[in-house]
Image 1 (cartoon, helix red, strand yellow):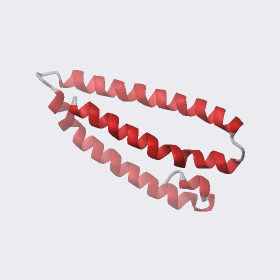
Image 2 (cartoon, one colour):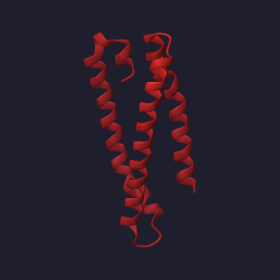
Image 3 (spheres, one colour):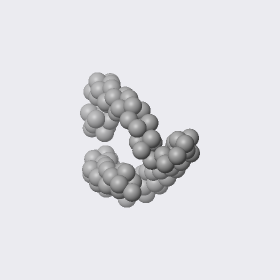
Length: 111
């Protein structure tokens, strides 16, 4: 929904509000199941180690993703034929990136 704010700027506030409610629900769900996932990885009393490693991996992945997004935005802003094409890029990239994210999470949990 956040992507839609670029396409429908006159509906920014309602779209952003609904998107933030959805993100809050996602964060709440994630926070409630994360301890169970960490416990399943713990072989002994190493919950702190597991939690720290998972948090470190998440921070690194977030920072790498942010850096790539900045670089791609700069490159694509110069190469895009129009502003409409630049706005469409997130809509095209999101399904691919979301699928890759789910694939890697699945593989991480299975290993």
